[in-house]
Image (cartoon, rainbow, N blue to C red):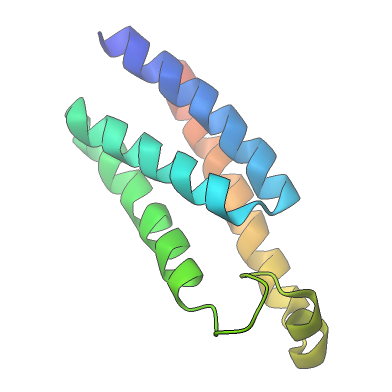
Length: 108
């Protein structure tokens, strides 16, 4: 059972790495929530606590999108307010986190 959990988490992590490169917010949020819930159900507390802040951040970012914007990465808002640098920094942090999780799942 434990091997199946980490194999599924490894595949999910590969999908998250792909999604974080292409800025697909909703599928990334669902995949991160799936990984978090999977670790909670399988009682891997350390990995669950490692995934929980990122899953919470994804939900927070999605809920804070102002009404009328196209999404989290609205092209007009990024260039008008100079948010591109902060979005790129956030994306690189997420990518590093997903790579770290990939190797944790691979080791387990």
